[in-house]
Structure formats: structure tokens, C-alpha cells
Image (cartoon, rainbow, N blue to C red; front, side, top):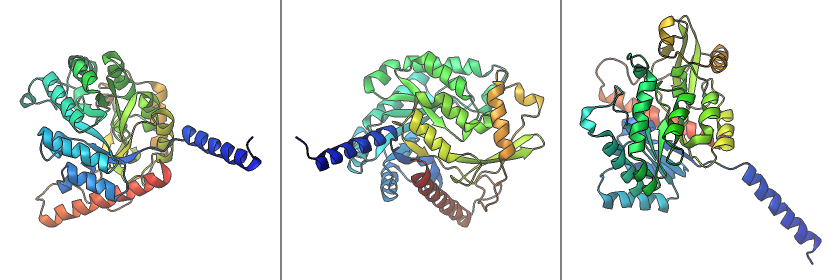
Length: 354
């Protein structure tokens, strides 16, 4: 028969285990694009991640690998396991009708197939990819045309995704799709092999509240791009630019809570993109709505509410896209900024999001 003390300890342990199950701790990492000015490759990124206490990473481009030789990719996989860092992989545009697609990419299904196989060789569970960007909503064909093209490509690569066990993770990318549209592509392609790479910065360009994005895409999410945005009212609608986590207008604590509730198995990858000037979202102009004829009023109202609560970003910043020659000192300043901003965001996420 158990003693009273043993019974108490056993009950306490069960309670703690139950609380952990109800409040899972997310894996924390970053998308390698956060450090783009450094020109680092996959093994260097893994060392950087380990140094900063990360247990996840998204190697967002095939160009981030030192080599695509299978022997080298096996080394990347082994290093990830050695450091206990979960690897997600990434590629770029996969939609052959989008402006971002280039003929040099070759056959779109073969292009995606190759990326899936590379992701498999590094032990990734998912491969991030995207349709296009805002311009594809205004090319006269409409975003649904490009959504259909994307679905065809995904279906063409279905057997490879299932054979490798790597899920295609469709990103809501730079104003191409609102969350419900990305959800449509995933569901019509097949949830057995397609998921979401949920980005909290890109919804702004679609006049969508990042919490709406989380609520709609969260249950379908396999991997993430998490960042904060400063946004504020503008005569044409609003202006916004991305910033360090905790310095913008998005409730990042709430974003972390939603991820833990809706997609706790997905890694929280910070994709910190600073150094960009403010961008206008002209939702007070008729021309904006030509690209968004099916926006849901209740969701847009939540976005407007976020804008009205917002404020300009009042911190110094080196502007990466500034015109003029990029002298060595400018490049070094960008490198320092990107590292400091990622480090600050990681510390914020450790304290407030995971």
C-alpha cells in the first residue's frame, strides 16, 4: 500500500505532467533569412542556433546549403541531431503562373520534387514554399487563377511528398493570399501532404490581422515565420513596417498562445526582417479592392481596429533597401543590426511566447 508521502508525490507528478500536456512548450528557432546579410550556410546557421539556445531552425533556401551533394546533406542532418535542433527546409516560388516564377526554374513539379528530396535528406519534416506576392492579385487573372496553378503543382508532387514524409508547407507570402485562401489551396490539394507555413508579418499587406491568420491557418500549420509589425493610420489607409518582436503593435504573447493552442507541434521560427522602410496598405483607395474582391468584412474590421491602436516605429534603423552604393561600412551596419534584432527577438520569445 502506498504511503501518504508517496501518494502525494505521485499525484503531484501526475498533475505537473498534465499541466505540461495542456501547456506545451514550443520549439524555438529562426528562419535563416533573418541573417541574410551574413552569407552564412547551413552548418554555420546550426552553430549559431545552438549558441543562442535554439532547438529548431528553418533553412529557408536551397542556396543556404554549402552543397546539395547527398553526402553533405547527411552531415547537415547529423549535426542537427547532434545539437538537438529540428530542421525545417525551404524553397521559393513554386507557382508557374506567378510573376516570381522564372523559366530557369524548369518544370515546376520537378522543381518541387527536387526540393522535397533535399528536405528529406536533411531530416526535415516540412518544406516551405510560396505562390507569389501582391502583384499576382492585380495581373488581370486574379489570385484564384494562381491558386489553381499551385494546386496542380502540389498534386503533381503528392507521391514524392508522401514517400519522403516531408509535408509541403505553403506560406502566406508577401500579400499573395489571405489566410482563408491559403487554407483553400491546402484543403483542395490534400491535408495529408500539404500544410501551412504560417507567417505573421505578411498578412499586413493583405489587410489581415495576424491573429486572424493564426485562427484560420493554425490547425493546418506545420511550421511558422513569426515577426512583429509596427503599423499606424495613413491618409491612404495604413503604413507598416516589420520590427523586433515586442517593439511593434501585434500582441506577440497572444500569437504564442494561439500557436500553443492550435499547432503546438510546429516550431516557432522567428523570421525577423528589419531594415525595410514603411510600406503603405492603401485600403482607403478603390484600386486596392480590385485585388481583394472577396475580403470578409468581419476580418477586415479586426485589421482596422489593430491599425487604430497602432503607432509608428520610433527606433533607429539602417534601411537595407535605401538607394545608393552599399559601401563596406553600410554592409557591416546591416550585419550588426540583423544579428542584434534576431538576438533581441529570441530573448523576447523565450520570455513571452514559448
